[in-house]
Length: 90
Image (cartoon, rainbow, N blue to C red; front, side, top):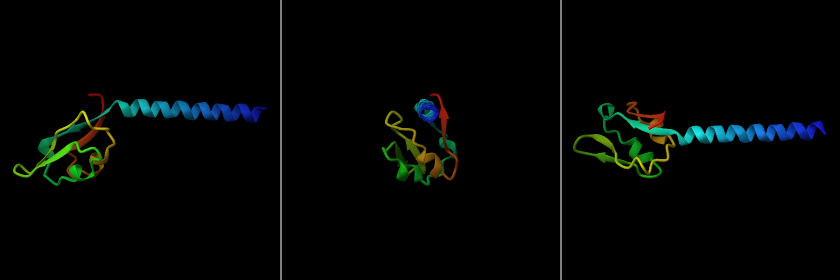
């Protein structure tokens, strides 16, 4: 019987951790620093929902659709200039 109790505790602990992570992810937002952007546009290339647009004249990226952003962090990982950060809050 103690094995079943242990498994149940493990299940509920894992579920609680899942929801803690989900709550944290929902609170993350992209912070873009255009003054750091050098127009590499890797953010544009990797964004799965199309939040970024290249501005070829000014050689910068434009974060044009923040409402569509799912805060996956792909753009953050790809930006060589550190112009994009994923932070808690709005």
